[in-house]
Structures are given as structure tokens and as C-alpha cells.
Image (cartoon, rainbow, N blue to C red; front, side):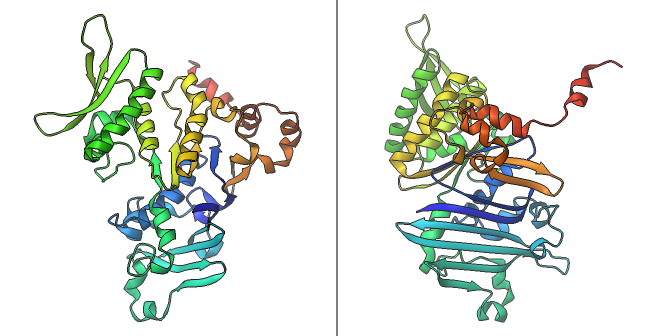
Length: 386
């Protein structure tokens, strides 16, 4: 299964967004344009669909409540509803999942299912609210996507959303887990090492060996990587580095560079990705990494995609990623800020750069011209004393 199109209304920066999705998508745009929030559409659905994650209510509340998720530009658009429309395809079968959410009202403002529909090849399998919802309105605080007793006819969709994985590890959070969110599978790395340690031993060793091989090529003098547990029962990353002594120098995550921690996190995310597909969301994977490594990321990701059937969506500011010879304009989604919210277009569909694309200019140069047009004179003046 794979996602083929994403539509959303009133989601954070976006009054409306609609884009197709193939095997990968590079999301570009200026700061605060909504790159993270776009990735969060699929991350949100993944949290709703994952058993034990708390479903709709927990997914909304972890984002600060419905008022924080609803776009400031919504006003009367779609009656102020949050709407997510996802088209999927599975071996020639077309699926559609639609979820519309509103606040409960009467001061409670819990997220309520305003509409939930599922179609398979045009046949409606689910249409809510239904008669049971009208008899018991509390049912509308939950989606059927999150309920195994209710999603049997479209469980393949729920299971695909549940495979969504998100990478945006923060090195300082890995070093000091107390800085994290405290949630299981903290996206910023609060329990990252614990997750590695909880992986079955044989699998963990196999995956760490693969990461070890990659790190030997990427990190000078790197020798080995394992997980060790201290006297208090807390797991640590334990790496060996070659030196002039006979035995390697041992370092833990506290002593790793930001780049090494980010790279370990990215490699673990890749090797532990589901073997039968899913969506991998990468937030600026180039952060803290050497440009030579960044240039190889598209190839590394492409290899993982071939082996696992992954779809990859990543946000980036790195020219090295966009200028990889395999990246096509139809794989680059450009976000541009307008007075009525952020809009998104595939680079291949933007008429004003058609000549630049035809001339085969570097994609990073073309994108830079689209997203960096703001007047920076005020920013440059900050260093002046008067």
C-alpha cells in the first residue's frame, strides 16, 4: 500500500493544501512556512491509528488542543472544520480515507468526529456519523480508525497509517532524557536509547552491526557501537574509537558530537523501518552532518525504499539533497507564505520557473529564487550600533 494524494483544510499553516505523493517528496520553503506542520498531517494520522497511543483525543491534546491545530486562516473555510483527505492505492485497489474534526462546544471543546468516511474502489465502507453515533454522541470522540473492533473492513488502511515513522532527534534530549516529552517513542529522542535496548537482542545486534559499518565509513577513527546498561539500569550508547593505544577509547552518548548522534539516529530509523512499507517522515535530516554525507543521503534512502517499499517525505534546506541527479522537479514541494496562509506547489507545476527547469539549472538555485525573496535589510542591520 502507498499514499497517492494528501488533501487538508484548516491544518495549522494551511487553509488548504493538496499534493500528490509518489515514492518520495522533498519539502522546501522559508522558515516558519509550515514544513514541519505538513509532515505532521501524516504523523497525526499515525498516532490516531496506532493501538495504545490514545487515539484522536490524545493526538489532538498532545498538540495543545484543537485551537492550536486549527489554522488561524480558517475563519469560515469548510465551516472551520479540520479536514484530512488521504487517497491510497494497494495493488490496484483505490482507497479513500476522510476525517473531519470539530470542537465539541459548550466550553468543553473536545475533538469530535464531524465526518469519517472510507471508500474502497468507490464503494462506501464507512460513513459517520451513523445511527449509532446519534444514539450515543460520546462515540464521536473516537474515530473508527483507532478501533480494531470497528475497522475490520478497512484495517489495511489503519495498519498503513500506524507504520508512519518520524525522525527529528535532538542530540541534547538524547544526552539528557529528562528534557524530552516523557512520551513513549518521544520523537525528539528522550527514550531513543531505551527503544534500541528494548529491541530483541539478536535483531538489535544485527542492526547495530549495519550501523557500525556505516559509521566506520563516515566518522573518523570510529571502531564499534553497542548498548551498555549502567548500575542504575539506564541504557547508554557505547562507542569505541581507535587511538594510539592498543585498546579503543570508549565514549558514551554524552561525549558524542551532535552530528554523530543525529547520524546514529537516522541510521537506526532506516534499518529499523518496517520491512513491508510505510511512510518515513524526516525533518531536516542534514542537520549537523558533513556535506559529503548529506550528498549521499538520497542514495541511502533510495536503497532503503527499494528493500522495504517505503515512502519518504523529508523537509530540507540542503542544496546537496536537491541537486542529487536523481531528484526530479515533480518530487519537490515548494511552500510559499501568503497573506491567506501557506500554499504548496510541486516545482514542476510552477509556471514562472519553467524556463529555468528547461535549462536544467540546479534545482537548489531555482528553489532559492522562489523561497528567498524577502527583503533582509532589517535582518542585516541588527549588528549596527546605531
